[in-house]
Image 1 (cartoon, rainbow, N blue to C red):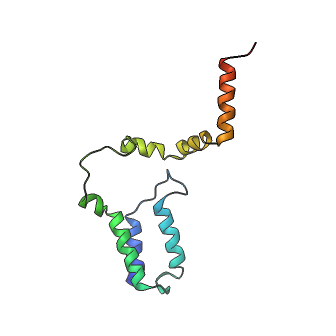
Image 2: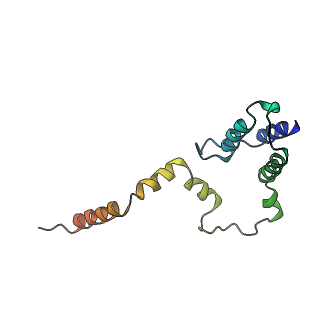
Length: 122
């Protein structure tokens, strides 16, 4: 079965991103392939669907649509550069955002605490 070999070749050209533990697309694809091809080439799979998935992943890996629809501007919807976006998606930055977003009661308490600290009642 050539499909299994095609997937293995595709994964060779798709590196793992160690800066995104648990959120890396490459790792997710590898995990799903382990399930689908548990017996290697001898696995029973829907050939047509498997080929469609392979072609889609190949287009993503080769940046097909990024080349067909090249961006002329380097701006983003957030106003950040690509490097800044990558920095904001690191586990440390995501943890800081999660700690910051603790909920309504926490924010109210924090606001009251800060106001009390600025304007102490004597």
